[in-house]
Image 1 (tube, rainbow, N blue to C red):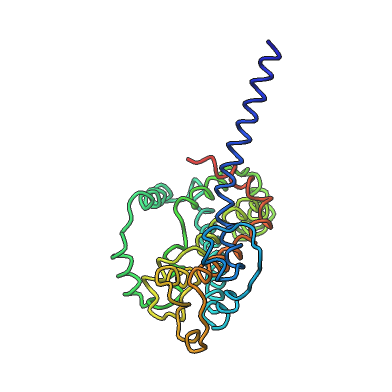
Image 2 (tube, helix red, strand yellow; image 1 turned 180 degrees about the horizontal axis):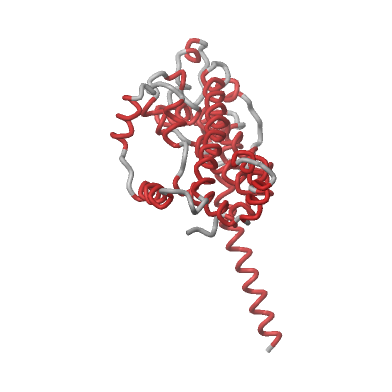
Length: 291
């Protein structure tokens, strides 16, 4: 009986390995294909639609992409928006969540109701566009950062975490003469590092991948982030967004340019993850309890 159970257990393990391996491959293979295709000579890529192991390596598409300032400029815009936007998101979320975790705060329930209401009902695209227009934020980077400065869902997770901390921490600090800002920045935030690191990744990835706001609010193509430029390349398949490349007389198949641009737009944000990975699991566990 024990042998039969062991055999079933082994078969189950093998099945799990095959299933998880297959799922992992479906997630990894597209990235591998895109990166390999970006380094494959354009004429080979045109003949073979699917390549995982390149026979030759070519930087022709990368030379073409960086022959103008479009991609470099868009990358700098995306990096700036991601860093400033993520910093702004974390500061605003912490500054709003910390007082809401304080139960005797007057009007706390009304504020929580209004925050929760926005999770279910939003104004929509047209009212948001009109607000940005009336505030004079059109064609400015503030239009991409301010509207998404606080996520209601993330705010509730921060609030619950702060609420779960022992009150003795704050009380003993107040007895020693500390004010609320000192308690928040010198005591509460250092012990909230796993939570903050997790949401730095989440906010950062959201800013990096964001493109719709730029399409709505940015009229000047020189202010576009990398995702909007990538979208233009994929939809038009005619170049990298300006006339500099055509003036230089360089012709590269659109497929190579697409793969190269996707790689450039994806790899930078992936490089951040290993540095914050150790906090990620713990931070997600903190955020798993809501209420």
